[in-house]
Image 1 (cartoon, rainbow, N blue to C red):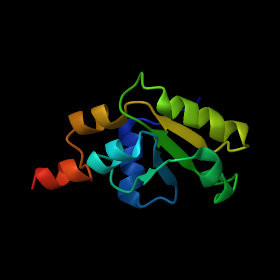
Image 2: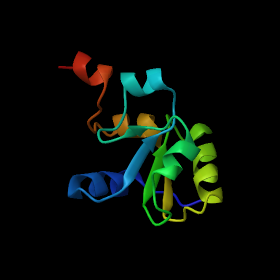
Image 3: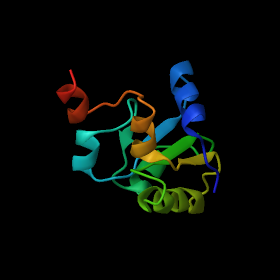
Length: 110
């Protein structure tokens, strides 16, 4: 499993790199808080059908031991996606760094 660090992910977002960033938690969790630019991942197979196997994908969930992003990574990988990364630190690490969040929590902080 290829891991992307918080700093690497932040740099990719800041540069506007072309990749898909998927949050693998449930819809309510996504609506409450997610990394800006994220897409809520409801169904790996449905999303995979929209992508090319060469597309770059990053999956994340809430924290390093959360299995949701691990499962999504394994599913994408089994479908032939190899340009694939897991941001293991998840929302917890992102927020600890003081990086911006989107969703209800971001609106509450304004």
